[in-house]
Structure formats: C-alpha cells, structure tokens
Length: 318
Image (tube, rainbow, N blue to C red):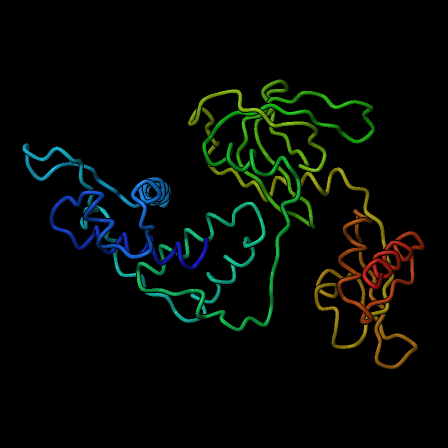
C-alpha cells in the first residue's frame, strides 16, 4: 500500500470518526485530502476505499440523518471502532514491523500493510522502529497454489487440486478440507482432511499441479480442536525424508544457524575452523541454505551436496 493511499485512508477514518452525523460523498470529498478533482474519478476511488476499510474490519455505517435526506451518508461508530489502549514495548513494535517486512514481497503483503495501517490508527508506528533496518527478512511464496490455498484456509472452504506424489507418473486429483498452511525448511505445505481417504494429510505446495478450485462454500470446513499444523508438517517431513549426514568446515564464530542443529562439533586441523556434522534430507534446500553463509562454510562431504553448493555460488557470481 502506497504512502499516499495510507494517508488518504487514515484521513477518511479520522473524518468519519469525528463526524457526529452521516456525511455524504460530496461532504467527504471536500473534507478528505487526496481525492481527484473529477467527480467520476472520486466516485470510483471512494468506492474502492470503502471496500478497503470494510476488509480491514473498520465498521463503516451507511444511513441518513433524517427522513428528508435523499442522499445516503457514511460514518464510523466510535463505540464499535475503538479498542482498548494498545501498549507495546519498543522491541515488540520492532518485531511487528519486522514481521510485516517478511511479507512485503509475498502473497500476504496486503494483509501486512493492513495490519500496519490499524496500528498507525491506534498511535503505534511499527515502521518507524525499522526506518534503518539491519536485516531484511524474506519469505518466498512462489508456488501458484499458495494464494488460493491460503484463501481457502482463511475462509474455511474445501478445495480440489492435482497432486503429483513422489514416484507417481501422473498427478492425481485430491479433495481436501484445509486446516492451515505452514513453512518448513524452504517449503510450503498445506495440512487438512483428505475426504477421499478420510484421514489427515500433508501436501507440499510445489507438487500441486494445475489450478486449485473451491468445491464448497465458505465456513463449511471445521478445524478439529487442538490441531497443530506445524507439528503435522514436521512429523510428515521426518517420516517421508530419508536422513543423510554431511560434514562441514565452519569458520569459528560463524554458522550459528548450522551449529544449532549439529550432531557433533570438533576442532579442525586448520586453526580458526571447526568440523560440524549434521543430518539433512532435502539437498536442494540444504545447498541453498549452506551457500547463504558464503565463505564461512565449506562442504567436505557428501560430494553431491558439495557440488550443489558450488553450483549455487557460481550462479551468484555469474
């Protein structure tokens, strides 16, 4: 969401909150800065802004001030809008802003911007806390299935999609009541109730083929109490992936994201380096993760993992 649009929506919210009467579109146009001079262009923009406010959960009401009024007016009920005071510590504000940055280039960018807009309306500016960020986190959602599956989880709608399981020559149609999506080790997964098999199932989004279709109305999926989507994905990952072992040479004081999962850490024969042994399952993801440490990590074995890391580093240089 652009700064200009954010400021216009905030001005619109303040205007409608301050009004004690219903304001007509003409009155709003005169009171709120940022709208175009052309009335037709204003109408189109105002309609979009109304939809935006309702999607953000802001209680926009319509009505007239008297039976003699012919034009419908708008207002925001202060009683329905106001929340208890939001008191956040500086580190909490920074974490909220950081979380929004994670989704800035992904499918949930609009939802993240909407959350920041609500915080700013409450007097909490999470972006100022990160005006000069030292890190720029990113979560990729390149899989085409992510958008419709996230929407299905949000709206509690059943879906159907083609899915190519490992070792299968063709994709099979799967019917799912989705409970949630989860991110693990660079991959996105959807968890839910497979209606054809009448059991809980986990599907990797990168193996979904074709379009995801909605097969039922919103609100028709019930998530069982106590469901833990992340735990389901973690357990599925352990069961389906054959673990392998790799040996890494890691510079002292570096590679903390690797050391925390190490099975063994010993001193290397080269001063200033350690030998780190750990298990992995997905060569493609693991090679990308190791390559992100640059010259601080060297793969000693196995050969295919070493070659994959070298290939990624060469690609960066190219």
